[in-house]
Length: 165
Image (cartoon, rainbow, N blue to C red; front, side):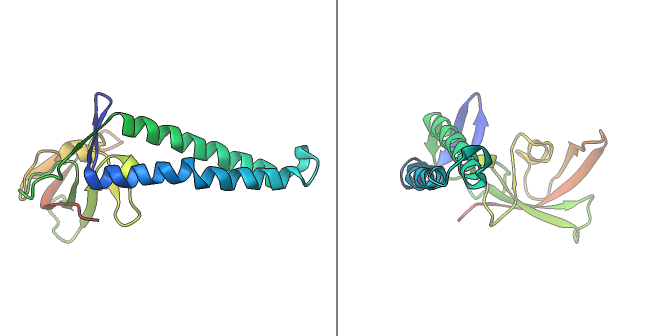
């Protein structure tokens, strides 16, 4: 999992390997694919009115941005161990909380950097209001965090387990 602080990103070996594989794909086969799309669209004629060309160029721009993000992220990465299964909330943990003491109104999320967001589970950054509010709390403890409207919200930590993909 990741936690960004002072431009250093902490990653487990598994997270580092996944991000490195994504970078290798995007800077290799994916670049070749997008170049072929652009070339094929270019051969269709007038570029000013060529929707396929413009779409491919936009896709290329997004891909190049992601490549730069991954390069910077991995360049500043420190690889470490997954967090301990000790019930203390920290980056790399899957956290289950209950809102305002209502044990039926729960949310489960991964506390990690957005770079490691997964479609399997919702991800909250350790720097987010909720993330910073629950950070360091133990199972059974209450935590407070500030809502966008300036009011405070209270949650109870029900579970905190290391993330296993």
